[in-house]
Length: 148
Image 1 (tube, rainbow, N blue to C red):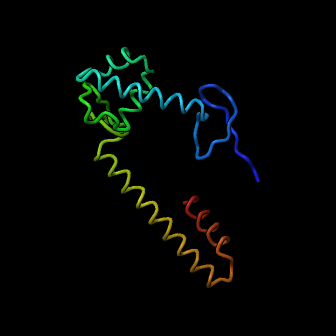
Image 2: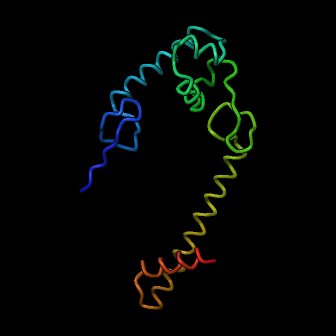
Image 3: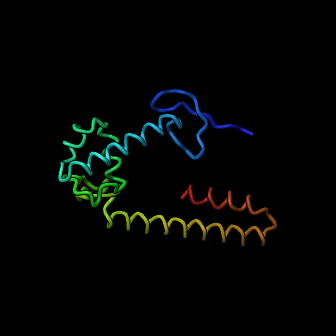
C-alpha cells in the first residue's frame, strides 16, 4: 500500500492529504479563520468594494477572489465583485464560467461520456464474439480511436 504524502503549498511541511488538499490541516485552519474574518469585515462594512475589502481586511487578494468565485458574497452587498468568464469573457459574479459556457462544457462532457460508453459496449460485444478478454478488446478500441 502506497501512502500519498505532499508538501504544503504554503508552509512547505509534509502532510498526508485526505482528499487532494494542497495545504496542510494547520494552514487550512488558519485559512478558515481568515475567511471568517473577511466575511465579518464585509458584514461590518456594507457596500464596500472588492479593493476596499482586500485593503481593509488585510486578506490576500487571491483568497478574496476565490471566495467571490465560490459565491460566498452573493447577497452581501459587496460591490465590484465581478470578473470575466474563463472562456468567453462575459462578466460574471460566481464560478469560473458563465451559464452558457458551463452548459456547453457540460454538453461536451456528456457527449464524450456517451462516446466512451458506446466504445466500451462495442468492445464488450466484440470480446464476447471473439473470445478475447474485455480488457484486451477495450485496449484495441482505444488504440483504434487514437490512430484515426
